[in-house]
Length: 326
Image (tube, rainbow, N blue to C red; front, side, top):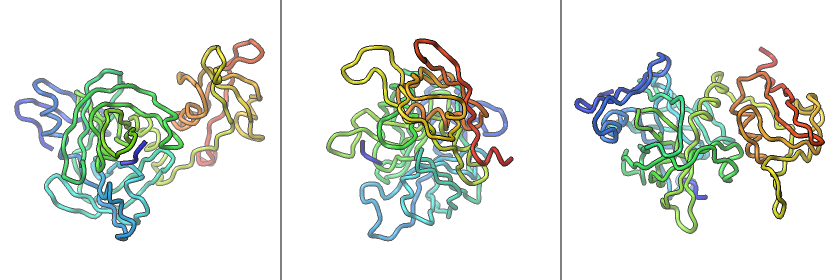
């Protein structure tokens, strides 16, 4: 952890099957017990194969969980390190080979492929602050265990772990070995993937933990369907508003526009003050970078800006080179 098919017979947790349009639903009873009983079959320990001198002694193992067809395992990219090969340990204790099919260090997301499918977990439609949630992960390599809390906050960006961030903050305990674990809501959906913990002097849980949001997971998975990430370069450098010592409304000021970038072609200029990109409020560079990735499947982005006291909407092309060549 970086510092800074079964159903529960009585509780009836139904895990949604990705690709079928079904949704996960908790029918009643103790939802935490239901998650521990059913979703455990979808979670694996991730065992990167590294030379002994490169093994992370604090976190030699990680966690992953099955999505889509059940053969696809999502985990945290940093768990893999410099590994070229990886294995996974199932809930039964069986160890299986896995292929690394996608890595994206910018968002700390990686995908593995296994031969035999597991019950896949599904993503949610909505996540709200205060919602109950549990992490199901391989804490300290001891095996899969459950830790519960709430969604403390959403839309955390600029925390400093990844280049592109869209975190959920949770007080559910996340400890070394749980990187890549699913953060699961009471209805059995995946709200996010455990990625990092915020701490001062030790790599332990202090109640301020971060999970890559389900919406960022979904965006990266869609982009990487062909086995590679091909997002467009950022065309702007922004500074947050108000700056230290200043007053005013929150936003971000453009301090540089890259010549020939989509923003440049759309007519954006230095001094423009960005309030939002689509529905995402922009307070600085981290929000802008997240907006590009979250909207990777969209041809255009709407930048809501203030220029010389006038409010404007500017349409910016958001196509990557891969999309242009389709």
